[in-house]
Amino acid sequence: MDQEENLSTQVDEIEALSAIYPDEWKIEDEAFRTFSATITENNRTATLLITLPAEYPATSPPFYLLTAPWMKEQDRDEIYNQLEQVYLDHAGESILHLWIEKLRELLQVVDPTTEQVVHETVALVEDDIPTKFRVLEIEGSEQECPPITSADPFTERKSTFQGHVATVTNTTQVKLVLAKLYENRKIAQATHNIYAYRIYNEQTKMWLQDCDDDGETHAGGRLMHLLQILDVKNVIVVVSRWFGGILLGGDRFKLINNAARDALELGTYIASSGNDDVTKKKNKKRLVLYRIVPLYHRLATATPHFSVEPLKHQMFSSPSLLLIRLLGLS
Image (tube, rainbow, N blue to C red):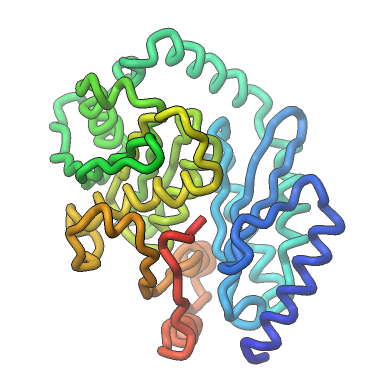
C-alpha cells in the first residue's frame, strides 16, 4: 500500500469516526492529521491525542498521547500496553475505532479511588496558588535542583509566554525544578505554568513521562506531544503564560509550543533555527524537518520479538520524512 492509498484509507476512517462519535471525536489539525477522542466513563474523562503518519495504516502505528491527569501511573501504563497490543493484533489495518473502544472499556475498570485522591491534592494546591509546588513532598531532598535554562519572554496580543527547561533523570528532580521555579514570584503569579517531562530509563528501556495543564485545558498534553515528536529525553519543559485579557483561541497552543521550543533551543536539547530575532521568529511561520519516533520503543520493550529496524528504515528514509510546520503543530 503506497502513501496515496494510506491517505485514502485515513480519510475514510476519519469520516467514519466523525459519524460514530460526533461528540467525542474532534479534528485538532486537519492539515497535519492530528485528532483527539475524549471519552468519559463513570464520571472520569480521558483524551487520546492522535497524529496519523503518512505510513499509517500500512507500516506504521499512529502517534498517540493519553491525557488524564487524575489517572494513576500503573493504570496509564496498562492502557498503553493494551492499545499497543491492539495494534500488534491488527497491524496494517485501521485501528482507531478499536483504540477508542478499548480505552472506553479500560476506563470502566480503572480504580475508582484514583479520582478522589487527585481531587484532594488539587484542593490542597488551590489553597495557595502562588506557592503550590511548595506543598509537594520531595523525597530524597539531598538531591540538588538541576540547572534551569529560561528563554526570553515574548508577548503576543498582550499575553506573555516564557519557556524554561532542565535536565531531569527522576521524578524527584522534576519536583525540585518546579519548586525552584515557583520561588520566583513573577513565575509563581503566572496565569498558567504548563509543564511536561520525559525520562528514559536506560536499564529498563522504558519511558517515564507526564504533563500538567495548570488550568490551560489540553495544553500539557500538547506540550508532551511536542516533546515526543522532537524525540527529546531526560528533560522537563515548563511554559509560563501571563494572560493579558485577550482570548487567543487555538493560537495559544502554537505560542506555548513556540515558547517551549525557544527554551529547548537555548538549552541545546534541539538544534537552533539560527534566528535570534525572537519577534520575527514568532511572527513568521517556519518549516522544520523532524524525524519522528513513535511508540516503536515501547512496542519493542513490550514484545521482545518485535523488531523496530524495518519500520524505522521505512519511516526515516528520505521519501518518508514528515514535514511539520512547528507553528501549526497541535
